[in-house]
Image (cartoon, rainbow, N blue to C red):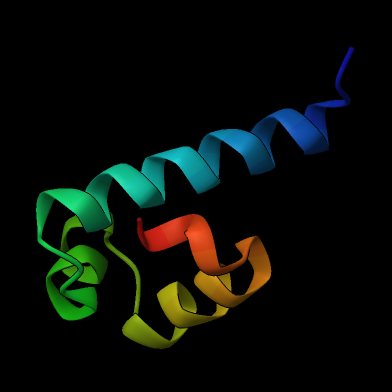
Length: 54
């Protein structure tokens, strides 16, 4: 079982990974699609680890 926080984090990591893959790793385009600033996306990819954009 996961806590809500863990479930949200897992969803966020997977969703960001999917978006990054769909834009061939272009963080600017990914951030635009996600509706967040590029710096926020960078923080998230650092938080989630190196496999986030693969």
